[in-house]
Each structure stands twice: as C-alpha cells, then as structure tokens.
Amino acid sequence: MERRGRAVIDPKVRQVGFVTPGEGTDLINLAIPLEQGANSPSPVLIPPVRINDGASVAPAKAAPMPVPSPTSRRHPTVDVNLPLVGLDEKAKEGKTKSLKERTSKAERRAAQEAQRAAKKAAEESGGSKPTKGDVGGTGASQKDSKASKGTHQKTNSAERRTSSSGKPADKGQEKEKKKDVPAPRMQFDDAERVAKAKKRSLVEQTETKNRVELFRHLPQFVHGTQLPSLESKFFQDESMHPHPAIYKVGLQYLTGDLVGGNARCVAMLMAFREMIQDYSTPPEKIFVRDLTQKINSHVSFLNTCRPLAISMGNAIKFLKTRVVNLAEELSEAEAKASLIAEIDRFIQEKILYADKEIVKHAVQKIRDGDVCLTYGSSCVVEMILLKAHEMGKKFRVVVVDSRPKLEGKRLLKRLLSEGLDCTYTYINAMSYIMQEVTRVFLGAASVLANGTVYSRVGTASVAMVAHAFSVPVMICCETYKFHERVQLDSITANELGNPDALVKVWGRRDLTDLEGWSPEDKHLQLLNLTYDATPSDYVAMVITELGMVPPSSVPVILREYRRELPG
Image 1 (cartoon, rainbow, N blue to C red):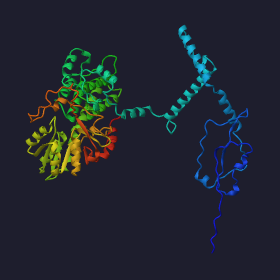
Image 2 (image 1 turned 120 degrees about the horizontal axis):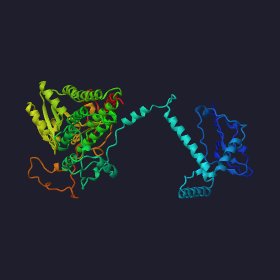
Image 3 (image 1 turned 135 degrees about the vertical axis):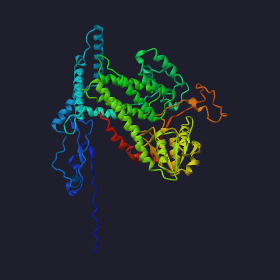
C-alpha cells in the first residue's frame, strides 16, 4: 500500500493593524481568498480615517480588538462582499467635531492669562470673582466639560452605592465596617501628633534625649517625672480633674503597683463603674454624648499613666458600644443601672467565668509524672497548676524567670506554700531544663488574628526552645483578649519599660558596671521591652473558655465574638 505524500500548502499571511495603500496598490488584492481553505484566517484591515479635506488622519487611539469565542475560532466566517471602506458617516462627523473643539496650546495659555487678569482686576475693584465662563468661549466650554465630568462622577458614585438588587446601600453597614477597623496607633515619631497629644495630656512627660532609633515610633519618656507633674496639675485646674476612682487606678498604673492583664482590666472597669454611678448629665447636654466624651477623657488619662493593654482596649470598646446602643426611652437612672449591669456581666462572664472554664480544659492535659513548665507569672496558669494539685495529680513544676521584673519568684512562693514540687531557673538555662519537660503552659496578653501570641518578653524564646525539643506549647488566654490586629514582629507595637531597671542585677552585688549611667550618654542605650510576639508555628494549642483550638481557628472566634458587640 503506497503512502501518499502530504500536499504542501503555502503559508498564510495575516495582516493586522493599519494598511496604508501606496501607489498602484489594490486593497482587494491584500485579502486572502476563501478558496485557500475554510480555516485560513482573514486579514484585519483598518483603513485610515478620511475627513472632508481629503487628508488621511490616523485615529488617536486604536480600539481594542474583540476576543473571538471558541466557536468563532473553529468556524470563522468572512464576508467577502464587505467593502473595505473607512468609518461610517456618523463616526466621521463625531471625529470632525472633536477635532474642531480642540484648541492649541497657545490658545489655552491665552485663555488662562485672560482669566488671571480678570480675577486680579475683580479683586482690586472689590467686586465678585469672575467665573471662567465670563472670560471667553474657551472658559465656557471648560466649564461645561467640568460640569459634565462632575455629573458623571456623581452618577458613578451613586451606582457604586447601589447594590446589585437595585437598592441603595445601607449607611449603617458602612459605619459598622469602619468600626471593625482597628484605630490607628499613636506614632511618636510624628511631631504634629505628639504636640497635639501633649496639649490634651494631663501628665507632663519629658522625652528621652538619647532615643533608640529603631523604636522612635514608641513613647520614650524619662521615668520618675510623671507623678510630681500629675499632682501639681491636678490641684491647679479643676476642669481637668478625673474621677477619684480613675485617678487612683492611674496612679497604680504609674507606680507599678497594679500589674497583670486581668487585674488591670478589672480595676479599670470597676473604676468606670463607680464613675458612671456618680455621673449626672449637665444641663443642655445629652446623656450618651457627654458620657462618651467623659469616658474618652478618662481613657486618655489612663493611657498617659501607662499604655493600655489590648484586653483593656477591647473592654473599653465594649463599654462605649453599650453606651451608644442605649434605648432612647430610658431615663438617666435606668440607663446608668443598665450600664452598671453590663460591666458586672462582662467581668463575670468574660474574665472570672472564662478563667474557670480554661482551668477545666487545661487540667485534662496534666497527667501523673508530667513536668510542667511555665514562664513568668500568669494568674490563669497558676489556677491550673493549683487545681491539678487539688485533684491529686503527681507532677512537677518548672518556673522559668527573667530580669528585670522577676515575676516568677512570686509565683514560686505561692506554689511552694500550697505544697507543689517546684524547680526555679533563669531563662538562660532554658535549653538545659527543657530536656525533662513534658508540657509547657504559658499565659498571653493577647492572641492576634494570625495566631501570633503577644505576651511578656521572653515567651517567644521559651516557645521556640520547646518547639525544638518537640514539647507541646499550650497558651491559656481568654477570648476577650483576642484582637483583629495582624502582627509579625515585636517592633511595630510594643511598650518600653524603665531602662534603669536593667542596671541592678539581683543577687550579684559585684556587677555594678551600669550603675550611674546617664540617659544623655550617646554611646550607651538601654532598651527594656515589655512584650514580644510568638509565631503561631511554635504554638500547639490555644486553650480558651470556648474550648481548645489551634491557632488557625482564632479568626473564627473573633468573628463569633464580634457578633456579641452590636453596633
């Protein structure tokens, strides 16, 4: 059987773009006849635009070519009888009008000079300012074009506000979206914002001259100067007096007598509870607006004494939301009673009851013979260890501590007083002691939306070493501490402690090299960070009052928790 040879087909030529015929060139000869094959592509010929004077003018911008559908690609249809002529008469007329309306650069410049001269003459004579349309025809055309442009923009904005069903979008939804966005944090490297904050501040703070450049966006003040200025300013201006309960809590923040996320939040809420109970609406004031303004001023005072924790920010947001959503028909006494009840319910459910539920879940993870490690001092972790000891479980506790606060010493004393078997060590011996640890329980100041744990500085190091030794790290945190913020490091948002606390080394009287250092020394900078960020990769489980969840489930809890905050 003989194999037939393939017929050689001449290559097809497809011309795309502008084709300007020269002398003796026939446009019809440029087309490929259909007899060469049904699938042979036809050329795309875009002839030049011909205007009245007979000159050829190429279009300013070529229109985009339509993309053929798959069906048209398989079965192309070409109309042979289609005349290769220019645009239709309407397109020619529109093109001619657009060209006539255009003005040269010299004409536009002359029109602008005329407008300036007319405006200057009107100002000198004291009359009204002339409009652009009074100068000439060009100004009128520009005015008309701007008016049409403004109308077009209004139409587009109205279309964007209209939903797919044809109904205009609800403005309340836009307000709710704005409320969900976290408020921008204060950038202390912005001179204007810092100046405005100083005017509103009740506490005069002296900025550190020798600031750490990497943390210039964080407040760096000279410690020990706030309390005298606060006392002098408090007795001078009565209008700036905060409520006595708020003032007392602020002093405890300032002196360091009140520490711990839950303790600070409960003290703040109890102070606001007392402030609301003593509040009375001034004449010609609205209860909701004036009370919200009072709360904002007190919050700024507390923030000046010490930067608020993330959990405290969530509690303030809860309180202000309840104030805004009060029913209008309520009297002042009923509204105050409702707010006080909401504060009590928040403390009971979100803090006290939540800690009890976390203890129930976490105790199940402790078995006989375990070696449980904890870092610093967390009230929830302390409750877990004491509850497991009461249940008769045999285990040992390793308390890891670090300078400068050495919070683990106080936790160690309380655990030893209850009869627990404990071991105390510093964080520099972490890799040595981790070899015998089976569980790690850590507290948290907050858990962010990406699973990052925001806690006492040193927590990230403990979690990283535990992860290297394949020891599960369990974070015990209430859901009211969760936040929508996403943070990858501990530089963008942090709190700077007193650098003088790093000078003294407990138990080592011979280490006196840093004593007598001056903050004005340009060759020495002491940095005392308060928090750090632990990546979610080092966390095995987050124990909350809602159950034990992985760090990847934090956004789900945030979404469900936000439903409890209407408005």
